[in-house]
Amino acid sequence: MIGMRWLSRWAWVALLLSAAAACQASDDLEPGPAPAEGEISMGGSALGGNAETTVLGRAVLESEDISQDPAWIAHEVHLAEGETVEHSHEFAFLYAKEGPHRLILDANRQVLEPGFGAEVAAGATHRHEGAEGASVFWEVRLAPPGSALPGELDDVRLIFESQVEGEVPPRPLAVFVYVLVPSGGRTSVHTHPGPELIYTISGTIEYENKLIGAKVMGPGEFEGIPPAVPVQKRNTFEQDAEFLSWFLVDGAQPFASPARFPAPEIEGENLALLENGASVVGVSSNYQDRPKDSAFGANNSLDGDPTTEWSSNGDGDEAWIEIELPEVTQVRTIGFWTRTMGDSAQVFSFRVVTDRDEIYGPFELGDAASVYYFDTDFTAQRLRFEAVDTSGGNTGAIEIEVYGESAG
Image (cartoon, rainbow, N blue to C red; front, side, top):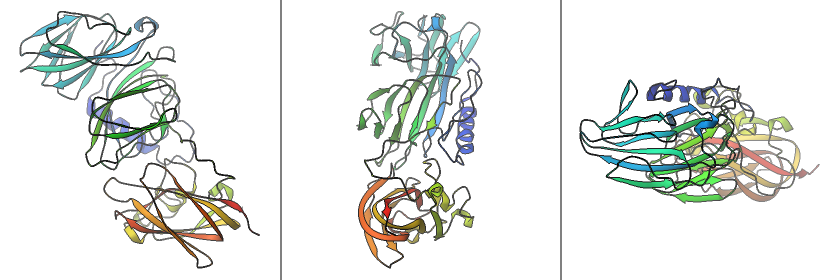
């Protein structure tokens, strides 16, 4: 029914943001505790990065609510002021696109403003009305492929039909979310415990998952992904981007957990990890002048966790961090993943100064989406990474990596 375990849109925003914030101090990639049935445990860093996520609807589905080989099928309906349509169909999420929309189910009457959503149970007879003017809305059904939206509809068009949703967990938690990725922003790399469908409604994003690699998606384009596949959405463009996503996840698992894309073929292990004996021996500053083991302290750049990061205290182009490896090393490869806050805090290039006063670089970073690797050939135990060109502000790093072999 409408409003199953319902919370207001803004209450869900607060819940998601607090869940994500609570996970920022995670020191590994382990998922969080299992959620209660029907609720959402974000795990790890949620969608992470600086993407803003809003839940528009969710419901636990029984086996009888799901047709065999279901697909997400979205139809757009236009209602004139005072016009109504009554029907029933498979489970669906409703999305109010333009104008206030009135949804009536049993004794429940709900007016949805543009950008809000709701869920409608399978087989439930309900009525749509153009409230206070014309209304444009989407009904996104979990239905057999090729099936039409039932009812006497004068102005309706198909928006999209996904591929069949495979690997649906038993009694899945269906979730409908809106995501805003600001210009220069990104989600973290993460996975979901069930299939996801994404549809871009405005702006442009660079979408990447482990199976297909990276692709650019603009308004009206959509893409599906199976469970447990690393995925990330990045906005390297000037305009903010918005997309909608529909999920069928295992409600007993964290909704999203941090992940990594496979690294390029690099020999050996990362010698710049704290757990491998590396350490931070100097830093230009830590955010709010806190210790190096604080929430945004320098140690975060050597912890191997993409959900944590080092932030300087406004050092901009003057930011630097010096690390010491466990022993004198013939350095073959270095990696650097810059943090970003969209229009600030991003390192575009850096150089490396060794304990032998040798300078290498500058090394150019294409974006803030992942680690960039550079082939090198020098000997050192201490390496000072210095920002050269940045967007200013609280510059820093998500991860720093070093590969090579002992030169002792």
